[in-house]
Image (tube, rainbow, N blue to C red):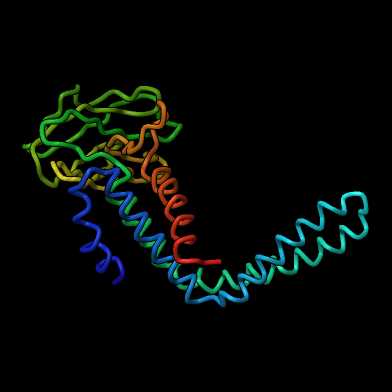
Length: 249
């Protein structure tokens, strides 16, 4: 039910540049979490506990030459910290499930690049360790062109085909040792794709995959960051900023 509510809200963001889309999602989620935190916790108590912990930390530094008293102050600091954490847990109970669903949606729609019409891509069958040679046949729909040898000879415990096709939803069929394996394929000019990896583990085949390229959203001085890393960076920035603006302790 929650996914049905989330998709109409976030799906239009897929038409935007991916960096902007993730930034907007991170801002909205951070805003919701901050507001829930503010109104589900006793902010007067949180402020007092935070002040206490700072004072205890200052005392501990001043008592570094008196370990016994420092231990007593540290014990009080831990008690205040535990009370603070228990208060914080209240907001987590309200936000945990929605956040998990939002992360699931992001993983399903923006973790990988789509397979575009006319774009060359690969599909891979990973075999069980006992199968190091032999052939696997790939059967593809009419609008999907197989550009590799077919049947394909197993090399290094796997078989890889090069394909391209027209926009559409398809089923690829892989035949090996008298068994048939199916894998969904989505070719689209929009930001959408079928789940790239299908685990099998039947003693013959470990997995079948469409080799979509992982989505790289942010480039930090040559370090290319995926959707999750980008989200975390934005989320930390927005959370710290919003907590100061809304005055959340």
